[in-house]
Amino acid sequence: MPHDLVLADIRLDGEAADLGIEGGRIARIGPPGTLEGAEALRLGGALVIPGLVDGHIHLDKTYLGLPWRPHRPDGSVAGRIAAEKAERQAIAEPMALRARRLVDHVVARGTTALRTHVDVDTEVGLAGLDALLALRQEVAGLCDIQIVAFPQSGVTSHPGCASLLEEAIRAGADLVGGLDPAGIDEDIEGQLGIVFGIAERQGAGLDIHLHDPGELGAYELRRIAARTRAAGMQGRVAVSHAYALGMIEDATLGRTAAALAEAGVAIMTNGPGPEAILPVKRLVGEGVAVFVGSDNIRDAWSPYGNGDMLERARLVGYRAALLTDEELRLGLDLVTKAPATVMGRECAIAEGAPADLVVVRAAHVPEAVASAPARELVIKAGKVVARDGRLV
Ligand SMILES: [Zn+2]
Image (cartoon, rainbow, N blue to C red; front, side, top):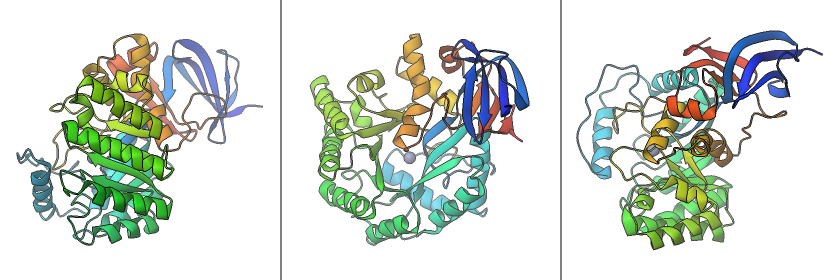
């Protein structure tokens, strides 16, 4: 029986193979020259890797496609929030259009699933969420989208936010967000009580932005771990950034990592330049689920970011000293299997797995992570959705 589509003459991390796709899934992996398809693409020994997964993006914030907007310098998180609100007034193009442009942009670079945060506060209400819920339907054949209701303006310090977050989950957001319980709200247990309460009542996951530094941030991480265990939410809670883990003394790092691993709390990094890099290898060695995302892509928070998750793996790998072949393979995991697992998704090149695949010119995975070559093909659920960096 011929398959719907065969990727012929490919490499799977060094091994020559053919790969047959049926009904959107990988049906068969066989030796080269053994599979037949209704359609066959001969790929001349190119490497096939899993579809890339962006574990943390802000589709609603991007200025991509607009005329260049100079970055307004302000180091503090609170200052950036204020600058962003001021800028938001000046942008005429609807957010839905910018978000769609960014989805197209990242899909062309191999992203087949992503977790986006969307601002929820008393100024924007649920308008951003509604736009992204509609977008999720619109792009279902290109990319799977998970949505975090993100309290960018604070929780206990922003009256009305708690009920909006709960409404956001009822309206279709998948996860409750949080933001610097100490640094923004100055009320660690207050904010955590609210966001864990909503998550428990609504059966939602949690993904908390935590920029709070040093011992303070590490203490908050251990409180999040303790609350995760108490709520029985192991495997459903993530903390994004957690810069503190790159700033604390070894013994504190050890017990904080142990608490995170035991509670199944995952840690997202995008490897931002000005911050201390997380000890990725150490955390993974201690059993912590580490995953990677883009975070900001040309928005009020950063003029950088291009949504290219293979390049992001290269950047995090460069900063976190992923050097041996085994460590470079971990680099690919950080932008494929690790974020997919956090999002409750299957991600593997194996018979039965979803046929979300990316084709690049590299001999094997270590070379692909070290060099981040261009994406020749992007396949979503068995269909070619992008070729040579452009949507088809
Ligand atoms: Zn973020």
